[in-house]
Image 1 (cartoon, rainbow, N blue to C red):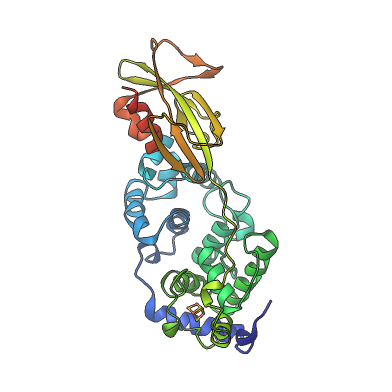
Image 2: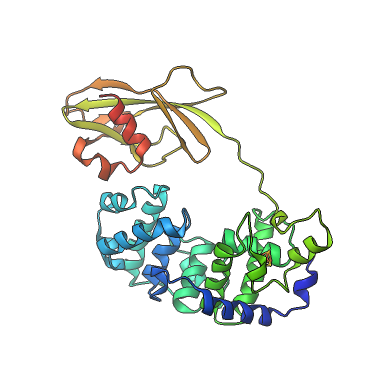
Length: 343
Ligand code: SF4
């Protein structure tokens, strides 16, 4: 590990420069208007999957429907999924709902990351984000932006996706958070990564850390090395080809659905029964295709008509969902398209 330039600047100085920069440059984002733990938590969960610009309308719509932790805890899961539709990663919406119920039952949010991590759906990042941003706990947060900025600041060439490297980043982020107001430091670090120290074209000339940045010093010394060589690229996960054969079972205007246990994508969601098999090559004939994470899915639906008195299939209770309710009950556009394609 090489930290030539940043070693000459103390952590306290780094934190102070960063916080000063943030005070002048922070974007007025809706979740920065409040230190309410519920609002901070919601924004952090949403921001894990998409950009700030994309999240804002979802965040505002979600809060208008579920303004407090209690409102979310008491809501029907289908209503929560409906408000989440379009954001993707529905397992996060389910975990959010479950955690809201657990938090509401215990009377609210605990104030430390250690306690928060014991709750369902709270990983190391979310726990630290909530405890530092809502309650001022002296802990750093480590997300993709922070990893990128710290890798460049210290010219760290680590396998950042491994637990060992994560611990290293966590300790660097903690040191910074302990050197000034943790709310300001953590927000500023994420802001720097989102607006200045961006993945492909960092604007080092206006960066508050430009004189301390080891990657910048490296790239000035070796013309072959660029700041964008940090962090090291993560080896890509290979795409998998899947053929999905959903059985579209219809009775009048209603479709029969089961919790998905047959496909590795859309786990736990209500889907038509069926089978999914991994293949080496794409099929020649299919109705349509889609992609969910690293799964390339070729869909071949079949259609069946059954009376609605059919209550069980494959040993599991069926849920009949009417056409009007599809959007509310089935957040995945791929699954809805499968249902609608067989009409
Ligand atoms: S100087 Fe450039 S590479 Fe270094 S932290 Fe700032 S924006 Fe990132």
